[in-house]
Image (cartoon, rainbow, N blue to C red; front, side, top):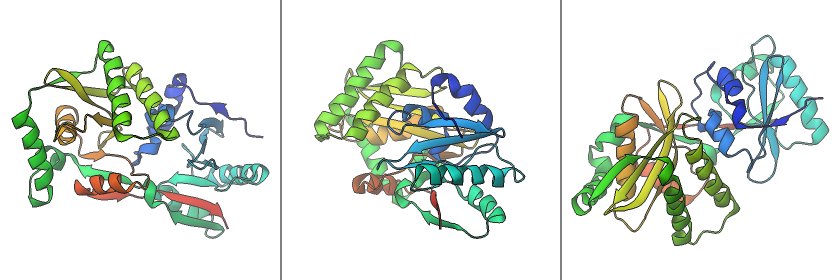
Length: 297
């Protein structure tokens, strides 16, 4: 029997040891992402044969495993066989979700047949060239550059690192954003709680947090982290949408201020939300990082 435990902030050292073994390309394989969504998706873990196993629930309430962390080609079959037994015992819909391509390659070497693998477009991560986000040059990004220029031309603004005194103000910005959008959604309630946890634990999670004051009022903030030497993740962006160009400003400025030395920026998935997908595509990602679901055929 596999005994899973709830994920907690104190588990960061354990997860970091496994996550550093491989340069993951998707936002799921960040301890920060796992930690802030641990309640919303009931994220749990256990260790088997020195392999870290993560179980979580998707947005529809179906449980599954993420790809094992720290496996070798010698022990992968034994680990996967145990997970298949668990899947059968607890009637899980999927065996794995949020899987990257490298794991699929390793899995197929051991199991040439027996698994059905499908892409999950709504969870593809958007990967951008950091210099492109900073420069906003070229015809393809002309609209974004125009909105940015409009903002800096028509507003007085100040950029700061988020301090303890500004945490409550940032939470208020988030609450106002939800009210303005008229959104009542359980996932967004979870996001609001996640924002609060990110801000209060920003040092322990090694996060970069930037706030922007517009005409004397804290009107936007963004939170991200360096995943590795090649990629940073933008976890949260919130801004007063009534201020024209403010989102364009924080998008460009945050990367410029904190991640200009990182080649690639991961701006996470669109969750199948049409407006969000259009916005992410408008910034011309260099790649959509695929994620896959795996079931036993």
